Each structure stands twice: as C-alpha cells, then as structure tokens.
Image (cartoon, rainbow, N blue to C red; front, side):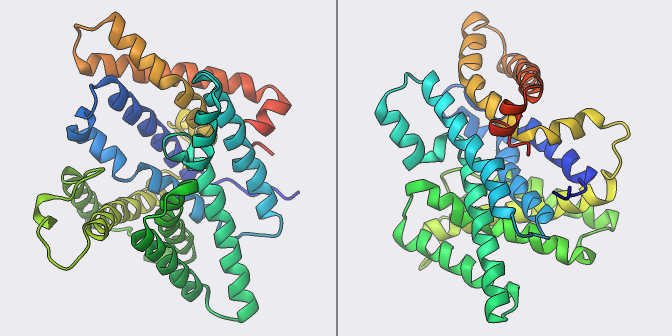
Length: 328
C-alpha cells in the first residue's frame, strides 16, 4: 500500500487541538455543573476545536482513492466500537447504557463515528460527481443543504445525525481549502484580523443559547440562528487555523512533541475520555478548597501524561495499535 506523506503542519495543528480538547474537558468536569458555559476559555475552545479537527481531516483527504472506505473503517469505525465498549464497561456494563452509546453517541466518542460517516458521504459525493459529470462543488453544496435541512426541519438526533449534518460542512470546507489553497490567508494583518474576529465571536458563543443580539429576530427559527452563529464562529476560526498552520507550522523544529501528539490524537482522544471524568472527580474531592484554576491545571497535565503513556504502550502492540488506534 502506498503511504501518503504526512503534512507536518496538519499533525502540529492536530497536536495543539487535542491539547485544547483535553483542557476543555478538564474545565468542564472540574467546574460545578453549568459553570463551564460562562468560562471564556471553554467557550473559545468549544467554538471551533472539533470543527477544526473535521476540517483538517477534509483537507488531508482531498485525494481520496480506492480503498479509502476500507481504510476509514479500520481507522475510525473499529476504534469507535472498541473504545465505546471499554467506556461502557467503566459505566457498569448495563444494556441500556450500551444501547444509548450507539443510538445516541452524542456524549461518548461521537467524533470517531461522525468522521467515519462523513468520510463515506464525501466519497459517495465524489462518485456521484464523476458518474453524472457534475462539478463536485455542486454535489457537495446540494448534500449540505439536504443534510442541514433535514436536521432543522425534523430535529432527528438518532445515530448522531445532528453532528453528521453539521460537521459535514466543515469537512467540505477543509476539502476545498486544499483544492483552492491559493485563497488561504497569507497576509499577517489579515491573519491577525481573523484571530480578533474569532475571539470576539467566541465571547458570545453558547452551547445552548443565542447571543443576546440575535434573540429577538422575527420569522427565523431560533435553531437556525444558533447553528448559523456557531457555524460562522467556527468558519472564521478554521480559516485562521488552516492559514496559520500552512504558513507557520510546516517544520517540526521546536514542536516535535506537539507533532507527535497530533499523530497520536485519536488515541489521546479516546484514552483521555475514559479517564477524564473520574480523574476530575478525584482531584476535586482530594483538594476541594483549592482554586478551580489549580484543579483544572492538575487534571489537564495528569490526563495528558497518563493518556500519552497508555497510547505509547498500545502503539508497542501490533494488534492494539491497529484495532484501538487505527494504525494501518
């Protein structure tokens, strides 16, 4: 099998992003219920981190070849199933929890499942484009409208459909950002402007509510406004991150550890997710009178260290590396 040359900047960017994922979960589970949603750093992270992961996947998959579906099956679907079973075991192993993990993967390792389905949808779009001799841009645009339309009209949520419909947009953005790389921002002042716009938009970002200045707009469904605002925020962040990454992160000099984390991002994502909730509960229980910042910092670094060591051990076993970490 021909190996695809890895993009250093993409691994570096994934390395930084997986650290923000772990930090976001440390903030979420160390703070009392609901308090994370008023934490600016949590909002900044959640405004784009998973969308950026999806966009990078779209960017590096822009030359999809025969065998892509089989490769994605081993890289994403098998690890999703196995890590979900491990997570299920840590939650007591009852049938209702197991059924919920697969019917509603929202609160579990949804990212692996969603990226797997999106990859299949995009390969299908490429096939339709070639068979009907229609520009891929038109096929993808129609598919985006169809997926998002069904999501908004029906509010269908089984099998993580709302994530598949929403994040398909970002996979497409990443894919076409590679095809039209010349339109990525290279001017430093434009990069700074994009960054400033992102951090301002993120300050009004919410997981469940609309920004106050959009709450009274008539004739437009609140769900559409909410998804629209979240999309624009993530879109600005992604254009900034892709532009910054391709310009400044193309060397592994001084960031080899980050690049390594990016290459191990699937494993770090899966392992830390199993650990982070009990870890945060343990830390907040043994040092309850310390500041939240201190608790979050301890949880963040312990989660990174333990997850990193576990992934290293898994990588040393060919079977674990293939089936748990998706290494072909």
